[in-house]
Length: 369
Image (cartoon, rainbow, N blue to C red; front, side):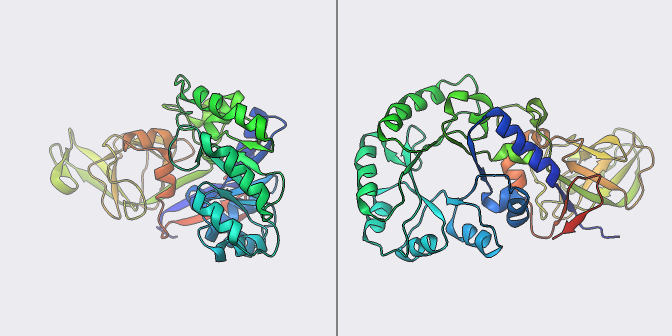
C-alpha cells in the first residue's frame, strides 16, 4: 500500500461537465481551456478525454506542442500568442492557432515567412486591461491582419470578461456593449464567454465559448459551488492516515502550539502537506472526510503532514484514506478556508502527488501517471 497522496481524476465527470457547458450554450462551438496542465489535472490525459470538444485552449506554445506531440489533432489555440518568428513558424507548421493581442505580435506576423497561413484570433481589450488591442485600434489591427496574407480568413475576434463571476456586477454588460457593435462590423467568429459567462451571461455566448474552471467541477461564481449548476468534481485529493494518537485535554498539536485539545481525544496524522500542494494557510476546522464521516483539520499544516480530529470518527486506523477535497468535500469550501480560490488549489498540486485516471471513481479501469 502506497502512502503517497493521490489525485483521482474522474474522466466521466470531466465529460459530464463539458456536456453541462454545451447545454448552457446550445449551438455554440466549445474551446475547452486546458492551460496550466489542465488546471493541475494533467494536460494530455484531460485533452485525450475531451475528444468531443471543438478546440483546446492553452496559454503558451510549449503546451500546444506537447499536445501535438501526444497525437492530439483537434484545433489548439495559444491564448498568449507567439513571441518570436520561430514560434510563429512552428505554430503554422503544426497547425496551431494563435491569439494576436499587441502591435509587436502583429508586426512580427507581417514580417514572418510561414509554411502555411495561420489561424488567428484578434484579442480586444474591452475593460479588463490585461491583454488586447484597445477598441479604438481594433479596426486598424484587423485590417493589417487581413492584408498580411499570413492568416486564414476569417479572423476570429476575442475578448475576456473581468467580473463575470459576480452576477450583479454591471461590468460584464459594459464590456459586451463595447465589444458587440465592433464585432458585428468586422465580422468573423466571436469568442467571449468564460465559465461564468457560459453559466451566467447568455448574451456573452457568441460563436465560441471557452469553459475552464467549470470543466473541473468548481463553480466560477463568488460563493458558489459546482453542484449549484449540476457540475461534478473531477479531482478528488486524498491521503492516508500515517498515525493515530490519543491526547489529553490541554495538549498542543503542531507547530507553534496554536491548537489545543479541549478534551481527551484521538487525532490522526495524515500524509499530506504544503509540499504536496495542500495550503499552509488553511484554517483549523477545515472539513475532511474519513470512512464516510466528516472530520476537520486541527493545528498547522506542515510540509508533509496535517493532523485531523478523530474524536467523532468510528474506526480511523493507519492506512485509512482521508479526502481533502472532491467527492464529499467541495473544493470551494476548502478554498475559502485558505482565503484563496479553487484555481490555486488545483494548480498548486505538486509532482509528487500521484494522479490516477478513471472513467468513474467507482469504476475499475484506471491509468495512473
